Structures are given as structure tokens and as C-alpha cells.
Image 1 (tube, rainbow, N blue to C red):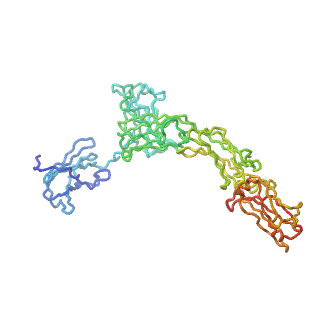
Image 2 (cartoon, helix red, strand yellow; image 1 turned 180 degrees about the horizontal axis):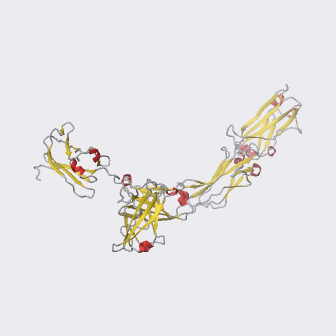
Image 3 (cartoon, rainbow, N blue to C red; image 1 turned 90 degrees about the vertical axis):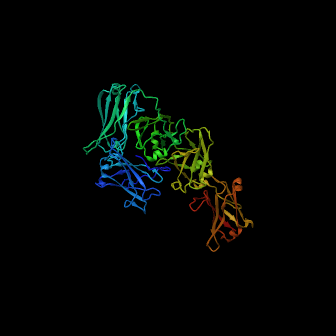
Length: 605
């Protein structure tokens, strides 16, 4: 057909509009009924008088050509709406009914003014029962490029694996149908292998094993393989697609796909302790991946541990992966990860990722020198009497690896009761730690029966840029010293248990407290006078209430002055007590105070 002359041809015009198409680009023929298909054409500067050529090309589901539309029309009312600038074009119903389950391309051509062709609108004619959805193929794990080499097979034959299907239920019977053909194309035989889905198989890939001998009979031939699902309590079975395998040497082209990638694994032996939360496994980008392709991941000797279906996001991002639980590293010396990608007519294997796995270490609890086990385990107690020089803690050799440092943690209740010590990298066993005496004291219980201050003692493995590892803790409590283990404060000028008032200088009586077990800077020391006034009422004075100083620790004694004015208030002939108490924590209201033995004196003239 000759077109009217044109001065120039522009870029493609907008595609024609079919408003009744659904989200799957389908034209629902039941909804259309016997009506013609209403379409619209719109382009910039469309106007009455324009001439258009309408092109509708259809084909059956098998690709056979159908009657087509190829007509010229004029843009005119009443089909042209000057407000919306749209021209209505009806496609006769018969062109659609004859193409049910087929396809159609629809476009137009502008013949006047600035001439040009439009983009094509593609449509499925009729609603698809499966909307392009297909069951996945059964994948042969010992294959690549849809070739199975009978000479390379082990005694176990070939494992065929299919991803789980959504409707899988206990009691379903899934049959693998294996049809062999000889080199000349003659049919050899059909074999069926059945799996009955059990409770533990629901939601997991299905595996069938075809013996090695079946492939020897059809060497240089082919095998057509598919599966059939017989649903429990459902009469109609469902067939999966047929996948054809050549029974011959595996070709060098196409090459195996790249191996799987483990996130944060950089090579060499794999340390399970660096992957305590499991492994994130990525499938390398495969440029020819299609939507609905299935990738099966194989872990060690278990095929199809994970099944991944590609969708549009996979193609857009190139990202496809799965998280494997850390349990896959338990009790194995090597980790072998493989995968296959397949769809009908395509089946490719990836290179095997074979990694040495380091043995996971079993961290033992620390050993507390002179500690005594208590129930329930792992409770222990330590008598402060045997830890006056400090507490000894032994760490069983954890088998330090390069880049690791050992840290002991004595996690007492208060700040004064906490202690951490970190060894330099490269330190060698034995690993012995001494806890400072003042730290031990800060954790003493109020009584031998108490356990309110029980605390954990453990060790850490500090690792650069990796989570810290910790040993199981020992839950320790520290028994207090008995009161008799503390010194008695001494008063200058006494005669036995009497203090003559006349012998006390005007500057007061000198009180001296010798060094006590666990003495340390910052410990709160209180000294209190508790006597009787001349009128018989109580006479109480705080002689000291402040932390122990560095000088006092160096001198190994504390000196307190008992003001003579206090003694002048004391009733002659009556006794008074000098009370000493110590706080090893010095942190707050919950601190534990320990009383020293009393010094009781009688004031005489």
C-alpha cells in the first residue's frame, strides 16, 4: 500500500491503549463476551482529519497466524474526543475469539502530517490458567549442561532433586519418571521411582536416586526425566516439565559456573567461631538467569538443602542467597557447597566450594585456687582467709589462634570488686592470674551463709573485628573473714583495761589501728566512741569517717586522736567502747560493712 507523501518521519508514537487488559497483559474473553474490543489512540497534536493505519496481528498458542486487521481510518467524531484527545478504535470480536490462548500485537501508523509508526502493545488473548507459571524441573546433581557422564558416576548413580511445591502434604506420592533412549533414538525403557512425603519432608526438596546401571544401557543416548505428583485426597495428578539429559561426556563449553561465595570468608581454613550466627551464602551473578529459574544449593552430602526461585528483583539486583545455620559446621572437617541452576531446557552446575573447617573449641570453666564447689553447678565459694595475698585463677588452655588475646574477667558486684586482665597477643600457657587482695575483699559476703554478692568469673577471647568469645562462667561467692581476723584498735596511756584520765594529755589520747587484711587506699574507715555521760545518758562521737589514704597504707597503720574533751564528758568509773568498721566497696547504700573487735576501756580518775 502506498502512503501519502511526508516531509519527515519522527520517533515512534505512543502505543495504542487497551484499558481492559489486566495486570498480566491478558484480555479476558469471558469478560469481553460478544462485544468488540474498545481501544484508544492518543498522540501529541492528534486532530480531526488525521488518517491512521490500524494493525492487529494475532497468533495461536502454537504460533499459527490468525486473521489480521490492516485498515485505514480517519480521526473524526463521534469516535474522537477533542477534550481528551483520544480516538476510539474498536477491534471486531471475531479477531479475539479466534485467538483464545494466543497472542496479539497491536499498533498504528500515522499517514498524514508528521508521519510515523507507534510502539506495539502486546497482549495475551484469554486468561492463562497458569499465567506462565511452570513447575520446576528435576535437576540431576551429577550433571552439567544437561549432560550426564556415565563413566564419571560413582556407585550411587545419579541423584535427581526437585524443589518443594507449595501444596506439599504428608502422604503425597511423587514419582520420578525416567525414560531412556539409545544412541539411535530407539526407546529403551521407562523406570519409575517413588517418594511418599513424610512429616519431616514437607517443605523440603525431594530426592530420587537412579542407579548407575540405568545410564550404561543408554550411553550416547538420552534420558527424558520428569516427576508426577499424586496428591493425597485428590484424584488428578500434576506433571512437572520434562528435562532431557544427554548421556555422554560433559562438554567443556559451557564452563562450570563460579563457586558459591560465603560473606566475610576470605579464604583458607574456615573458623566456625567467626561465624557463630551461621553462614550467608551468595550465588554468583549469572547473566543468563531468567525469572522462575530454580537454584538448588547442596551442602556436604545433602542435595537441595535450599531452593531459590529467581524473580524480577533477582535479575535487577543480581543478588541471590541463603542463610545457613551454624549447625552445618558442627562436627565436620570440610564444608562442601555446590549448586545447580535450571529451567526447562537449561541445567548448569557451579564449581564445588570445598573448604577445610577448623575444629570448634570447647571452652572450659576457669579454675579458682582453693575454691570449693557448691550446688548447683557451676557455683563455687572461696574463703577470704586463704585469699589474703590475692586469689589465684587458672585458665585452661583455650588454644589461642592468631589475632586473639586472652582476657580474664572477675565480674564482682561493685567497681572495687571488678577486675579484668588482658594478655598480649602471642602469650603462651600456662595462663595464671592473681586477683588483687582489695578486689577479693570487695566481694566478701556479709556472713558465711549469704550469697547476695555471688558473681561470675570467666575469660574472653578478644578478636579483632570479630565478636568476642566467652567461656562458661563460674558463679563465685567469697566468704568473709571472721571478726577475730581484724586488729583491735589500741589506746595510748592505758593500764590494762583502764584509762586514767589524768594521764591523757590535753591534745587527747592517741589511738592506733595496725594494718588489717586487705588494707587498701580508698576503703572507708569509721571509728566511733560509745560511752556514758555523767548524767547516765549515752555519749557517742564519730572520731573518724573517711577513706584510707596512701600514706596510711604505706605506714601500715591508722592514727586517730581521742579528744580529751570527750573523755571529760565521760562518767568516771564507767566503760566506753571504741568501735571500728570498714567498707571495702565504698560505693553506695548497698555496701557491706565489717566490724573490727571492740576495744572496751574504763575511764578512771
